[in-house]
Image 1 (cartoon, rainbow, N blue to C red):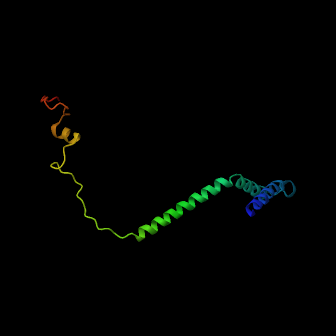
Image 2 (tube, helix red, strand yellow):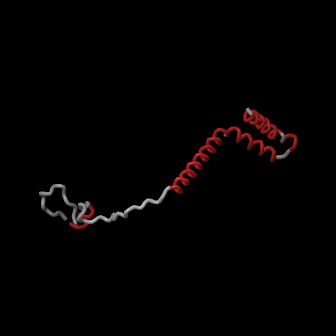
Length: 113
């Protein structure tokens, strides 16, 4: 209920500040009134952004806490280098080795340059 009353007060204040230029001739009051008006127009958008930033901040904080609590797990390093004995040659390796693109038909023994 307080938020609704505050919004109504800001609405009246912003229009009053804009109209005060005719009496006081101070542009800063008009600019403040325009800023209040823009805030009231975009209040839902601003609240959504604040909530999403808060959620992201809380999620990052939780993940940092979880990472701090995790213990280090001993792993065995795996050699990721492939050897020609373990795997078949890829097409690029075949082309480099043979000097031409091999055909799919293995019975065809012709070498095309």
